[in-house]
Image (cartoon, rainbow, N blue to C red; front, top):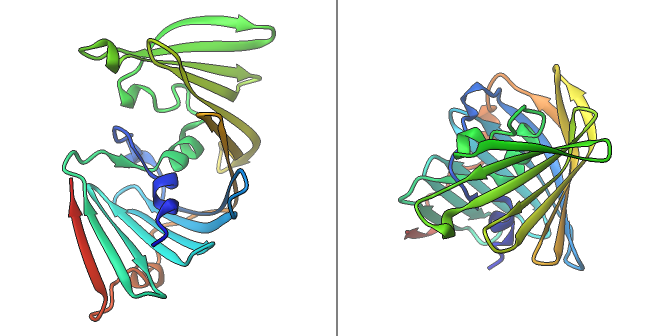
Length: 225
């Protein structure tokens, strides 16, 4: 059973303060090396969670609300219900998209502290750090800002670089700026996200929510960790 869509789109992170955000919808495409392109649409409401339609390469619906989420495969009529006891699921790609024009990129909500600045040519580099109880919990993030827009971030632990994220294709919508292209480079592999058709909503339409109601004859598997 194909489940890469969820694991690519969701990561285990401390929850960011989405409460101030408006409900929205946007289409996305994800490309990674020689793998088939993944296409879908996201509906997100800060109070009720995320609804994700994956159209290809597999028909899949994913709903996330708080500490639980559900995969549903309409063609197989099979669902996977998962609960994370830590309650820390959040949408990594969506966070990058929504918070990249903020002064702190939402990092303060993740426990980071701004510890310094430096310059690289005409680019300002902000240095954020997060220190835990042990060396293994240390994280450093360098944020590269050119003409008030974030162009790159580099994250590392106390030993090595972990990830690079590149932002481009900035567009202004509703007095905010959004990067319509995001590239995540990790372990030598690039994952490219492109976004389009951004719409702001008053609420998630009932017609969308209804499509995530599992049929009575659906085969359901439940997991908890």
